[in-house]
Length: 387
Image (cartoon, rainbow, N blue to C red; front, side, top):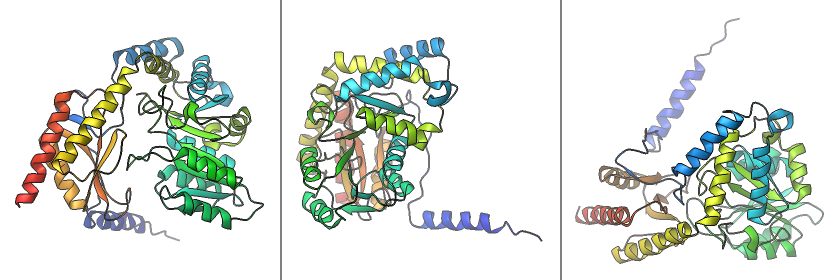
């Protein structure tokens, strides 16, 4: 019997056509860090990704340990450099233990898959990262989504949950598209009232917020308040990978049951070596965080003077909400012509009607680059007003 496989290409073509017609087609551009564009789209908040000290630490790590780990952590890929990095990350966040993952997405998938099942009651902020929603789905758990940052709505949902069910409340620490910070103390109090555990993904807070760069959770909110803490290494720390920090019992549980940890090759040891160097710099050079926060404050003052529609964020993520996807793409193209790379964010990453430029600031930006960005935004706004 002949099998008609022509339906597969047709299916792909139909989906591509629909995405293009909606104006939501995504395309990769080839970027060069040595090129003419100033990067206001990435997450290299402390300017460490191209720090020569990290590059040398990574090169030395590769010379010493090889280019790859060669196996999963549970076979023969768990090396001394991984163990040292996990200890340092536990110390940074004030937790007894930490566990490395290859990416932040895998950390969230693995943690939620290992903790939850179809009987677990999971409560998620409506603006949580996709990996948190996907992790609960992978576990077979239904996610009940509370209004963004609304503790009353969360309490209402928890009140309705079965009294004998395990409950897990999940939230971003810093929301990646809005730049606002979760009320960690408030979430913790609600969880305590309703016998729920709290999981925070502090991908965009680690290295940026906190007295020691330990994020919006870190040492300020102990393990009793936030039992499950996720952080990433590819943003402020400038390298790659992620980790989960918590009790020794939590980490042991993940080692046994988190499939994205158990069944994948360990992080390249050279990357772990570079991250250890990044943690040294984070501790020794607090002026990087101070400069970053000065940039944020100055940018917001000038943007307000220009009347730009910025969202209320005090973090390096500064969303310029323009509403219409086509308008966002026009603004992004104009800024690109001015030598400025910005994030053009449309649905489904953000809700319909909330398309935006996602502007991100870094300690590596110069005052002149910030001036260029503000001037280009002002020109684009004037051109639109005159049209």
